Image (cartoon, rainbow, N blue to C red; front, side, top):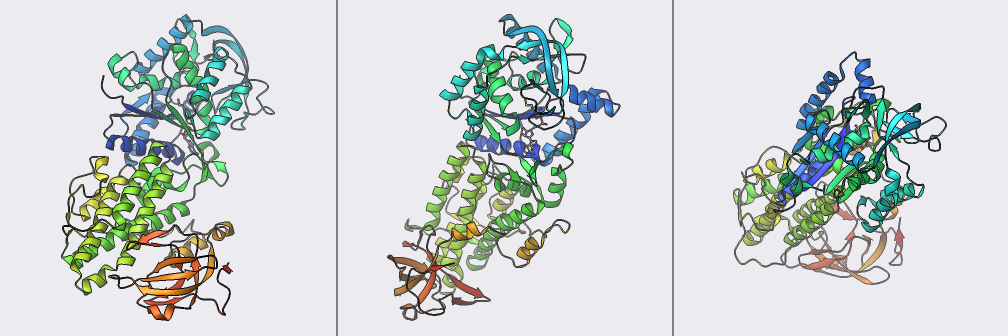
Length: 633
Ligand code: MSP
């Protein structure tokens, strides 16, 4: 048998209304992981779809005076196009629960579990939450309301088929205990173990008095409960009982991504269904957090839903995808604001990434006629090749842990480091002084870093990588993750300057807060922060003990600074403004808890504060002498 297919799923969404950016969030996350695994050379099966049965859909269709089938057909077609099409969702299969391939699977599983005694007929008496399509017992209901969504529940008493969940309580608990990364993140795992502590009751899995669903085999008065039906979509989409060989290659799912409110369905009910059917359980279920508006969940019924298409129209698909994946730590809840989307795009994409590309390509064009070649025999002690290798490793580790936001944080670190490298190496000075070898090395390193960035970004962004590559003179799209290897494209680039990668966005007038507007105008890469965050920056006074020029670097001084506790080495780009001698004995303000960086082979352990404008630079110094080590705050 060949390699196991990497199988990833999203929930199948209710086509009761237009979907919003909450649904886009899950789907873009799954898409990024699917794209990543394809680049790694794996065969991938990425499934999303629609959950079309149930009372809620039936009721919505009735309200619109429509046949439920026609009602869902219309919404589903819009979900596929324009929604997933515009968001560039690269799904391999879109499963609809109204398809006959799915009906067959649901009925087959029902019969199978019934034959084994795991499904039996009884009477259900309790409560039902229609928006959640969830049964609740008396003890769970809080003052007539659903414990999940807080909306009123309705009383139900009817004949029903039951699924013997209770018989599997111990087995599922043991599975969760034995597989610590089955439920992620760990907070959801603990929540589910807590839930199991309260005991499991058998689950009502059929309804009478409604038609919109899949019939219980041999008992047409009963329609199968929509969640029992829906969860089985993951089997249908893996060719269960349709193509055995294909099913063997795909099953079980490697990763199922869901919102936190349906983790219980996916980590207790669903795995028990699989156990009862004798099938393997998914490797991982990841329950991500909610996108909030203020502090409430975004949802159509609360009237605060944001339409992804409108955002794409305004800001482009990559800005929307990037914002969704970067803004909120994957797993946690986070507030959505359009201001934050604009800020993210302007800072990370326009400023940091876009400028890096723009400056690099412009310098290659100007200083070396658009052609940069790594001179032969150049030594290895260079910052960017190492930074690139470290970033590739970090992105891989984060992606393997499904930590998409941190993968992007790592990537952003590389972009900033490359921008810093421009400041430190000052290619324009090298050009002026005809230091051709050094100039080619720096420009090659920057260009090559951008090329690797185009590969690293391609799980996340769908337009920018190609546009970056066009400017780097690379016509081929990214084919493989192996292209992240330094030098894998060769030692020469012919660049092609092009338009700005991400034009700066003016903040939307209707939503722009004064602070954001001010930040934008000041062209600063900052946003409002809490005092706590500021206090994390350790600023202190130091006294410069010695200073010397760094050979071969026009702008750099190497300083030894007594910080009150020890003498630090600091490499500072102030040589054009301060001679080495003039620095000795001077008191300075330094950032003490910056991660050390290697500059020209020297480990620099901090940074001096300086003010600069229009080419003039002046150090920030204490007004009167003070003991080194004095804290600045
Ligand atoms: N049909 C069920 C799922 C069945 S899966 C076998 C369902 N559908 S839904 O349309 O309500 O979609 C819920 C999912 O959409 C969430 O689990 C999450 O993936 C996504 N989100 C919907 N609103 C969201 C937010 N406000 N924030 C983040 N994700 C959100 O439940």
